[in-house]
Image (cartoon, rainbow, N blue to C red; front, side, top):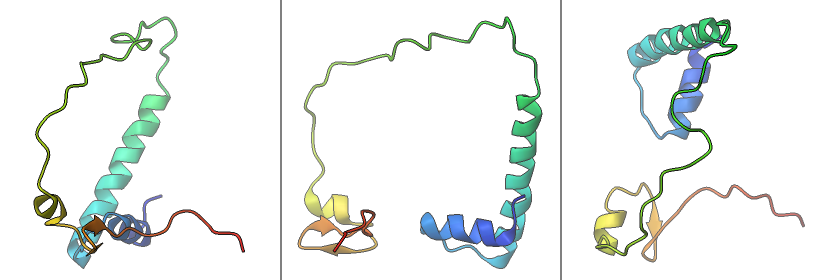
Length: 95
């Protein structure tokens, strides 16, 4: 079940500032999407060949290209320090 608090939490993680109206709309839309996926999971796909090849990943040559200037890359960063992105710590430090 998709409730408003779940939508608010996802929006916070994505750094989105949603209005109450948007939270209401997205709650319904995400619920509808998950319900559709549940319906797809009920389909009998026995004997149905997959579309495309699941065994290979298309590759391209790794060729160096033009880089962004540091200031341009950091232009929309919510927080930066010393020319780097500042991000929340995701690894626990044991003391």
